[in-house]
Length: 316
Length: 254
Image (tube, rainbow over the protein chains, first blue to last red):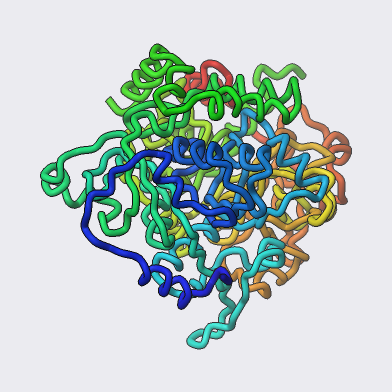
């Protein structure tokens, strides 16, 4: 499918059931809906509210030849590269954060010509998902004009029919699957998010299939008490999994702060042992465990509590 | 001359002074955010800091400076949390007066590269990419570049225009459709720079205390316009340095 093919995207959406039924399932069953070759859009931003449990299960199920997209991509992008599971990355930035330097595997793959990465601006990514969420093929904007980003992507310029000014047309993205992590949801998939909304609602609306993990499953009545807090309507969600600490060691607003020491250790191992350290890491944290509970046990309760306390200091 | 401040402290103070009297700032993390907080707490209390991840008007806790533009540390006590598209759309509408950003490579027309060193198809160094840098420099009313002054950074022409300054100079930015904004100033640890009104070439505007003109020339990979009279920047005051060190006591960024 061409990225801006809004007609095809509409047909795919119309082919699925939107019935208001219970969506609760397991990580394994939810991720089984992903096929090899799919375009997976990842919610959250950088190391905040990343749907890590869903990402890790995708790796566990050995999905291949994926396209992955995210506005600012953190080290989950490195995992897909290390596993040779990705054939195209669509993002505006890939790394962990300034203190941890440039991603080593990004350099190795990029500099040896093995990487297919589409370079957009951050707003460019946002407009792509927003256009998808709006069901239209593109959005006009004033960004990316004149830059080499416009040259190496599918952007097109047009002369505004009203003013004569130049506009940059940013093509829509219609991902096959959205992976989203939220604070709470009821069993029908009505989802609420605290803190930054990022682009998750656009990503979900633009995608054909939406897989959600939630820190907490709450009663439908509690959703109805605060409907203004709902970010995704239940009919948009295909599968919902209850996963406390589903973004750990990334941040979840108000619940736990990102574990920067863990990032230090991760990057230190790569600096010391090369990018094979990423596979070692995955063997320990992803393939070496058979459930999210077992994954959290590798970190230990104290670590989880420490990061929860750090979050409380910031929002309390 | 001995200096009792680090290059990044100097950068932060000088960047902060560029914000005097400003209403709204699009601040990246690191030095731009430190500078913005310093500005708000000293000479510009009416400043609203806007952060890419969706935070408007945060009050950062000293010692808990954010690493990203999208975490709790920089959402703390914000007046509004919005989606990322909404931040950029506010910027496109013209609400953001000044953007502050750095860059791996910067050229004489203020173009910034954070994508690749070498060719795009076969890069010598693959860098992380644009993030919001392209959008900030394209959409803010003006943009200030903040960076350490090094020859390998200051190149005649960037290998890849991630974020457009004045492109090939003159009216080239305007011609490309970027009808608003542009790079107004550059702050480095050696001095302050601006751009020639007509040719849009980078021009030295002042030297920081103790910095010689030769040192600036040695550390710039292209011919900088040099005015006849070069003023010396006012050094950081103790009050400015104290405030910065209070914000970042562990010197994670300073």
